[in-house]
Figure (cartoon, rainbow, N blue to C red):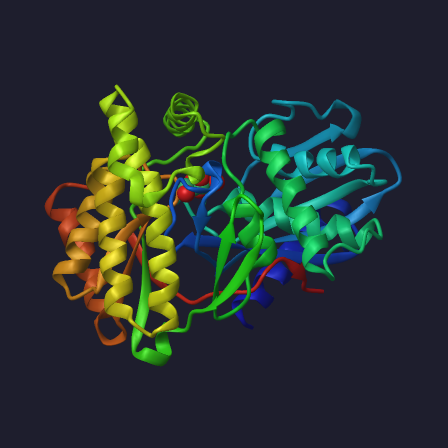
Length: 392
Ligand code: GLA
């Protein structure tokens, strides 16, 4: 049985255990890694993520009452909540990602039924690979089909579902994230990276097939704890808002890269200067990465990965020992470039490695962690996977 099939069958078994009957259907959505363009989404900037082969599956049936009952293979408890009781912070914990989607779609005027839902996921939780967005988007896909919303068949319908998932996360789960993760899970394509303009929400698919050039994208889940609801992510967001206000622009995207030095001179705070420098240069690096991919220039892409990591480590200050060790070790093993990916403060890194060196690089990263007394990381190569869809 293939990995997706075994997940679909496990989530179906879980559903039968919960309800005593077969689900109406099974839907899934991918986790993501961002190739480049970090902490740019909430600055109206550009980013370049891919969907992962790792997915979150949900088995779902509508209920006759207006209750949501949800059970996950990765969690102990069954959560039950009346739809009218869903509100900011309620329910707490992981079930908010499910309940929040129903709340947002209902708020948008859709007729949303109560649901029984079971969840099973191969997206590592807490690894900065957007397990929460995968769950939201799998649920949104299910509701679209079960409530006859018919939003999966068009880009604009998918974008509408992504917006509902973003609001579920920001308002109900109360994680102040941007829109990259949910947009990726809804709009990514296989073998392409998604160029996402977070000001216009326009997208462009950029061919991304490293294996054809003898390379792999190696993800290392550092196992260093990462949580978006704690204060650091929100504080970066606040600093960007403060800098934009001080510079008289609606978002940092409005700043011209060629005027960067003069712009930075207008800020009195050194911290804000560094935050702005990261965002403005990172948006430029996304443009460079698209050009590099289109020119099959993987060495150029690798240099941009390294510059991006340095900018996040030194200017945005969101790296940590584990992420620095993983990226430095990958480079020492011959990676063309390596960077942390996602929100930071832990989570995962990515490296652009020759296919033949992927295993050796993983082993070297594990050894480097052990030598420093760090918990064992998990490394795996990924390709670009497809978006939220119905599986069965
Ligand atoms: C997290 C957030 C995203 C984005 C990234 C950083 O993954 O969920 O919205 O801000 O961090 O690029």
